[in-house]
Length: 267
Ligand SMILES: CC(C)(COP(=O)(O)OP(=O)(O)OC[C@H]1O[C@@H](n2cnc3c(N)ncnc32)[C@H](O)[C@@H]1OP(=O)(O)O)[C@@H](O)C(=O)NCCC(=O)NCCS
Image (cartoon, rainbow, N blue to C red; front, side):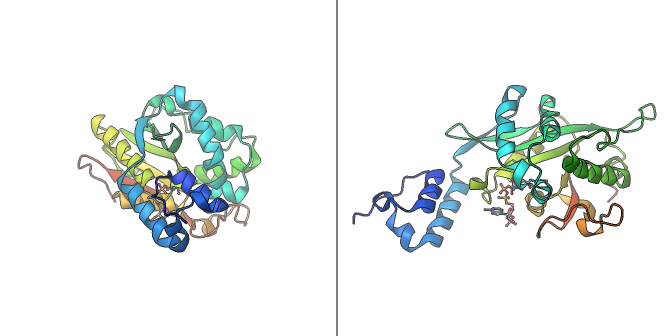
């Protein structure tokens, strides 16, 4: 059998890996040394990025939603635990802050969106503001309502503006999602770096991320974020029961923060 040079994209590499029925097209060294070749491939993808990062605009809404419905709606740990399914409320939540122009997408050379980091801006409440609205109230999707209740619970126990008394605007990283075929390559970190650059350009001193997933917490930890709040899912009870217990390693919801431009925090 003739030895062929490897020229396949990662997508086709994985699909060939899965089917293995067309041995003529299959790289022989991958067959005999699959793990070594896979990790070499991953390393090469880290260095030779086959994607670019761009600002998400409102005209991307449909494509962003399509990507999120394929991945985030199913594999974010709480969505996965609840088997969320179709959820118009999460669709609305996902697109709500795109118009604020501080969200980024990773676009593969083939045009597909392979990662997104959707963020919005939090403004320091003033004494004239009305009491903040409960997120869960009025939510008609019973499963998504459980997630909104958790967020209401966290909001009632922790206020990020107490940690940063001098900050009037804080950037809130709301949704981070990467196509499963491209995980572990640092794409979420690259999207975070673009978000931090945006903050530097717009003089926003702090980024806040509520990490429901151990992996998203790892992403931002690697980018120099630190934890200011943690709620273990096992300690979160409603009427004496645990409504949200995703599988390990996702054991806690954690708020991670990172200051830019030498902003001082109280923690
Ligand atoms: C969280 C997420 C965006 C991370 O994206 P990413 O580009 O893979 O991030 P990284 O490459 O930095 O990897 C982060 C961690 O994911 C884990 N990971 C690595 N390879 C992985 C793979 N192939 N599949 C799944 N997770 C992997 C590792 O724990 C890694 O941390 P480490 O570098 O300390 O080992 C991605 O896992 C995802 O889309 N998850 C589902 C949606 C979700 O949970 N979003 C966060 C809600 S707050």
